[in-house]
Image 1 (cartoon, each protein chain N blue to C red):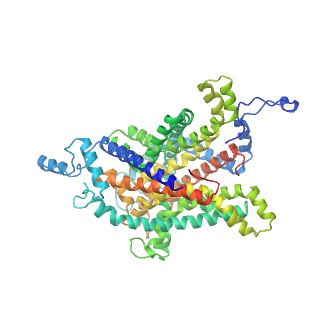
Image 2: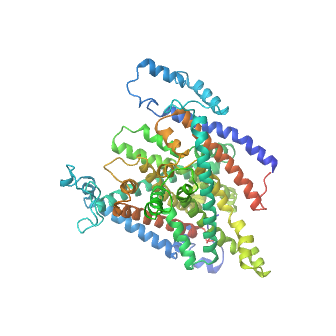
Image 3: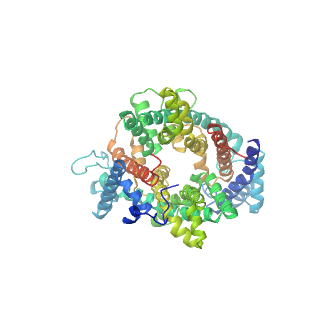
Length: 315
Length: 306
């Protein structure tokens, strides 16, 4: 159970009637603001997102994707350049600026994470609410479907979806990649939300609403949804890092975003290919993985902070 | 309890049938021929190859034939490696490799994760807590191929303590097991820490303290079993995933495990191999989920199954 039921009538008594009741969301946000680690995570996340968007706005796509002049015709002696004033993050073997590539790659990685979160909110929470609220046969059937999808190796689902659209345009392949990763990430959301709905359905304030003659729609949207916001928000926040990691795994397989586009996953995977005992192009690995690590850490902090904020009993 | 286990076992059958059916239909819905790589096959040869895999027969016949081959454990020859039987020559030799590596990795993850979680819960907000949780964060915040490559770079290339890869000697198991254990040990450490902190404020812990029990006994005998419940729930799916190998770790350390075939079979539309790997994973998953539920009852006496 999360925090206090949303639409409970304000308790009688002079002390309470002076101040309007705070919604569970407002209470949770107040607790969230007192959590320093979560706030730091949010700040880091905001900085990274802003930097990526700024990179996108500041024409870095061309810089990130086009090879500069001397690299157009491959000749000997061209290596990744170490960080310098001109290229603060160094360059890759094709002479492309790693700063620009890291920023553009960040947009792709964050986009994948965001898409997965949106898909899991849209499909997962609707699935979970329907299943939990309908109960009986429908609940059993819907949860069995989740069990079966959960029992399939997710990599099979993603690969088969991706090969379906392998010969399409870059845009279509990108969209499929986003949807494929989102398409396997809603299962957890559906389970968690259903569990919460089952608990709420038996609670007294829902029974009261039913006794007052509220219909299903009103109970779901006005009574239950405010109490599910926290669960859904936490689950969605924790979906984002998982989706970003899954994209990096697909990049390692060569199924990630098609080149010359980059994501943090493809950049890391290119850097791993360049690792050898003789020369280390550390900047190719350090910057994308640093950005990836910082983002995932920040997301985990924010997710944990949200969970604590919505569930004050847990520490 | 026995009745509960029997009922769960009976429920395995429809679940496995459904998983098999979905995998079968998805596999056929995906475009592209399994023989696309063999360029310019004469039509007669192609037809013969397709007949060998029953592709010329109606779907329900293929469905039944593959199901029979898998149920009897007879297997079928792989489409990609026409001289190898998917069960006898591919999965049977590779699964023990993944299993032993996985058991080792999961053991490391459980021990490291539990110890780190208990230490950080025993002294919350202390340097030890922050160190343990920072270590856990590394495991959560990097892709496994980066962790695996860095481990290899440091311990095999630079320090030369351990072999670069391969399979057979005990020293070759260390690096891949660490790479595999990174993510689960991080998760377990966080779950144990959260669980311990929650349990330590419970009434029965206060009672134990009032009785004058030693702090370490309170932590290990009283708090840990309850705090460990969420870890158990995580271990079910995690064990199924780890025991079926990891494509990344197997590729980087050149280990002949089954993880590779999960990716390879899907990439090459190798129908018999896809179905065999899917069923292997599904069987492990349902079995481990059952073991987890039995484990719950064992760890928490309040849980009763009817």
